[in-house]
Amino acid sequence: MELNEATFTAAIKAAVDKRGKHWVYPINETGWVLYNLTGEFGGGCRYFLESGEPACLIGTALAELGATPEDVTEGLNAGQVLYDLTGEGRDNFNPYSDSTPSWVRAAVAAQEEQDDGLSWGEALNKYLRMVGEN
Image 1 (tube, rainbow, N blue to C red):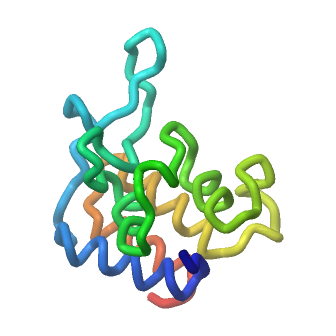
Image 2: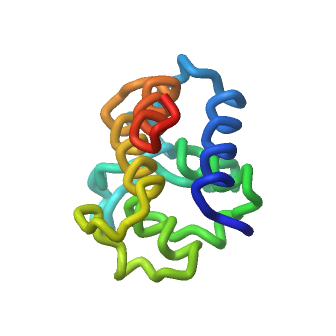
Image 3: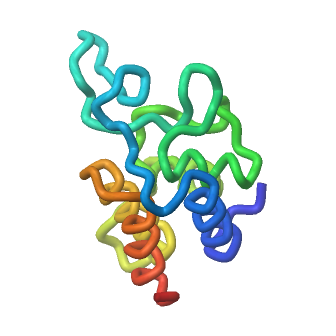
């Protein structure tokens, strides 16, 4: 999978087109959220559902690029997942570092918008503003 700003930007746009710009991730629905080992709400979305279907915005974008549930570690933030998939390594992700690519920071921000209950269209707009396309 080729993962960079150009390919990810095309994929996140395709993800929003697939579900619709007004679609809101069902963060409170069983199966769509992560739970910790004690069964309590873990505070985040799932990249892929147990069925293997892409779930969250970042997961759906990555699926557009050919990622599968086996490629993505649930429970990591979007930046860590993207760093894993680019070969940079999840532990090297630093959202505050100037060396972190803008598209990765933008993906994290878009994911946070989604997790806060905003529509995928609003999350995409945040991503595009941050990468200078909007």
